Length: 395
Image: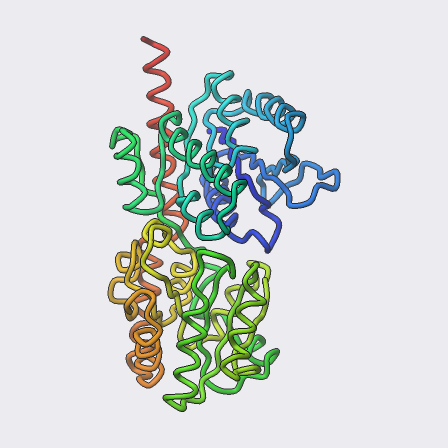
């Protein structure tokens, strides 16, 4: 099968780490003998050229605004889509979604939409209200509600997104599960974290938070829990935050206000190939959230990478999280720093319990939460889209 995949962001930038989803899925298709071309939109355009990523053709397109660039991208995708048996795109942002939809329609190609986040709700959490922000939100909302109706098939990363599809009137047989996965070879209990501990001069136990540091993320909870552990429980744990984003400065100010400079390490953005060693350095890994419409829809990448690494996990009991973790971690009250603190201390103070959780975590990743399973679900969706197209043409 020839599969044309389109993502509106930069697959080569550590500043947009969520693109690993489409890259890993493309790699799985390639392993299965399918041919893949992956269109992406670089953060900065410097006359990018068509490249190759482990056997996958990567095709850059300019992420610029205006009718000229939109028309140019429509024409380029129209040309590329001639080759494709099916077209897959992720996220509803107009600079990619509109050209994809038009190209698929003009070429009469099956179209699959991979809905992995509720983008309107993330936008609300990430921006301050203003006339421009409200206008953008309304446009984004129109696209996010319209696209599932246009696509032949839809994959969803959470049960909540499936419910949203059903509310939009999408037939259930057009909706497929595409939960997030981990590379269970790169993320593995055998990976060493010694170099990370040595780099940051860490000698004692380490608790790690991995994630983007912008609106809609909850590293503040992690910092507040760390402050309680250090100041109230008097535990000599080390804490690390791996990631970057617009709230990094505010988070550092919060650490300073607790007089914890030097006790909580900020690594900034790290290339995805270095994430396994950072997780490997940790004794406990944290995924803390609040209970809201953003987190209810998430299938968090960090959790499956913690699972595959065989780490004891403390995570908020919200959305897909309990289904993902089951008995491989400790679930805590969403948005509650005290509950998070108790969960972290419980695991850190019980080495046998921590070890057992790590074993269960790895098993969860091997059995279900890996990219092989996700890609197989998507191939089923593509076959459905192709069959629907053939049926419609026959009619």
